[in-house]
Amino acid sequence: MYSEITQEIKISVDTTFVEEQSEPDDFHFVWAYHIRIENGGGETVQLLRRHWHITDSHGRVHEVRGDGVVGEQPVLEPGDSFEYTSGTPLSTPSGFMVGSYQMVTGEGDHFSVPIPAFSLDSPHDISLVN
Image: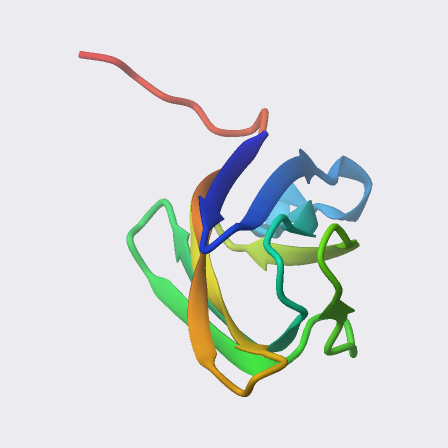
């Protein structure tokens, strides 16, 4: 599990390779990622937007920007958490993702919360060390 805390907002990420949706012979590899967002601060916050950098093992980067997550813009009161699961395909057997959430406080102050970089590893990746 990967996690990071910024401005008392904790982002935790866990990934799973989805073998049954992947077609390695056709260069199609799929991962699910589960994210938990926890508000450890004293203010209510709302997640407005997301921004992802998805990099495959050849260094190709795909950017994704959009409103909210999984069709929601969750509001988190102090002590609340929000969890969701999503997924991403790659044409290579490994890669990584990193991103950020644009948040706003109840007072209208906007801030960015980084999503920690996490690896996308499959059993189909053959790595050679020297």
